[in-house]
Each structure stands twice: as structure tokens, then as C-alpha cells.
Length: 445
Image (cartoon, rainbow, N blue to C red; front, side, top):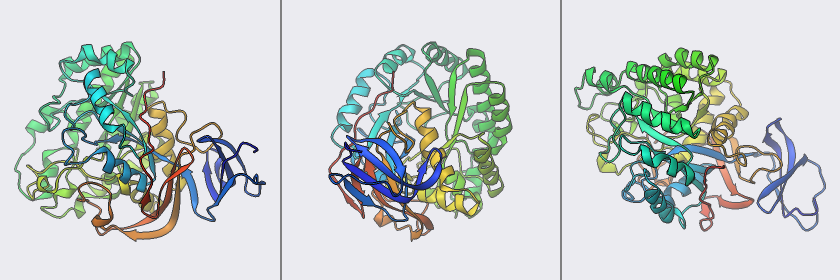
């Protein structure tokens, strides 16, 4: 321990081997050892005794819309990464759309990185985008370090990011499979959406009927068939339909290279509780019924669903109209995701080790960030310190998001994030932030 510059000690440290009392040794931003709780501390090392607060690896959120540049009135790297840090997230991967320009060429990626460089309070990586006309740009983007490519199978909601039909999906996926890249997919079938009733208005039941489960189920089935044919790596974004789970389980059993995520809002909010006109609850695919939610939790427990990410997709308040047809579809959740998931997980008998697996270990593995996602020697010293039994009531005014519209307003949540650490430096504690210290990440080669 002679090279130690920081030692963190807690009676509850979540490690790959389980939760235990431990002393975590950090040098030059890296965890160098995880020792017994009563291990000696070098006289020249700084000791942070966390008592009974839980030390867990910083969360890795691989689905965030920062919208910067171009729509920075919706969000931005400064505000998004502060909100993430306040919620125990130490790494995020930014989606390629809702910014202008979208991250669909190397030049556009360069623009995005230049904007983010001095504003990132946490580590930030980038997804590329797969559009109908940019197959030629996919390999250069891969070589430039994006973590994979996002595609929509139905309209995205913004004109500059058109969706792929089945033929163009096949072309893009064949190209990406050629260099063993990863395609991440918004899986809703446009034909099912077109056939669904589109009444509009303030009733949530009408909006839910406009985005039927069958749209997700068909799109996932088509994606599985394409991935199987090409032996390609695919990832289903923000799964909300439990009806797709048997198909996904079969595909995994057959060796299809498919992973799946869901989101805190699908796990903690239900259609039955959404008030009419409350478009802060609008997202696509939609929040579904409580019985559907139960099956999503079961799929998390058995591994059919791999991970949980926010799909943080904010907008200005004026775009959250009382008409579900015209309101922007997206839920802001960066700062609250850990507490929201933990609140429901503990109610259902899951432990914090499960939450860490879903929101840190597996998300880090999804994007190949082997230095993230666990408290063990050789990993980055990225931590969140959590008081899991303390509660707070969500006050939108206390959020760091640029626009403080939230579906969680007024909810009482378990799990107070006391501090967040990035490579051994405390970046937020008790609402006080350091200057931005995040790095811009590229896909490991």
C-alpha cells in the first residue's frame, strides 16, 4: 500500500464477490487493492471512512440524449453530466440524435467531441447513427471510436434522423457485422404503428393504444431474424413490451448475439397511474400496465433483460403539452435513476448487488469498458456513496437537469447519493460540484 494516495473504507462495499466490509486503495485514479476492513492505512494516504454508507461502482448509463450542440435549450453536456454525477453515474454514452448535427459522420463526431470537451463532469462516450444513406460512414465512425450505431425501425421524431426499413436495416447490419460492431435498435414496427388508432388528446389510454405491444414484438422478431442470418451483434433499446420476452429468451438460447435493456420508468411507473394530460410521462415505447411491469422485473431477474439505462430524453417544458399526440416523447431520469430503481428493487426483494449488476457491470460490458463497472483492482476508481435506507421526496427544483420536468415529481424514493467519485477524485458531495473532470472516451480496440 505504499503507493496509496486515497483509501476509502466502508462496512458495505459492493464487489464482484459480494458485499463486504472492506478498505479500497486508490493510486493515480485506479483501484490498486480491495483489502479487509481493518487493513492498515499508510500514514501518507488520505482516509475516507464512509461508515455504514454503501460504496458501489459508479453507474454506467449507455442511453442518454444530451442534445448538444444544436438543441442545448433541451439539455447540454454541462447540465446532463452534473445531473448524472448527482445521481451516482460516472460514465454516460451519448445518443447520436437530437443534437444538430447528428453523430452520423466523422466530422459530426468531431463537432460533438469539441463541444463536450470542457463541459463533462463525468466520462462521456458517443454512439454513432445508422441512417438510410450513411452506410459508407459506418466503418470510419467505428474507426474513430464510437461504441456502436443506433438505428430506428420507425420514425425517430426528428427529421434529420430517418428510420431504416428492412432492406436498409439489412445493408447497415451487414456492414456493421463486417467489422464486428454493435447495432443498437429502437424496435417498433412502423406498420403496426400506422394501423393503431391515433386519436390524440389528453387521455393516456388513447396514447397507449397508439403504441401497441405488437409494434415492439414484430420489430424485435425481425431484428432477431436479421441478426441470426448475419451472425451480427444487436441490442434492443428500451424494451417495454413483456410479450417480446419469450422470443428474446429463445434467441439467446439459440446463440443469437442479442442483448436487451429496459428503463427505470418502465420498472417503476405504470399506465394505471398516469393522469390524463400528464405528458411528462410520455415516452416511446410507452409506460405499460402493472402486469407487464411484473414480467419485466422477472426478466431482469432471470437474465433475459441484461441491463437498465435511463433513456434520458429531455425537452423544454413548452414541448410537454397536454396532448399526448403532439407532446415531446421522452422522460428525464439521469439524476433519479439509481434511487428510482433501488426503491422498487428493494420492494421486490432484490439487493443493491442486483442494481449494480444491471446499471453498472453489464452496461460497462455492453460497450466494452473493461475499466468500469466494478470495485476491484485494476479498474477506474469511480464510485458512488449511497445511503440506501434514507429517503427523499423528488422536488423538481432540486434537479440539475436543464429542464426540470420530471415524471417522478413528488415521489418518495429510497437511496440518497452522498457523494460521487471519478478516478479517485470526489466530483460532487452534498450538492457541491468540482470543476469538470470527465474524459471523452473512445471504444477500446
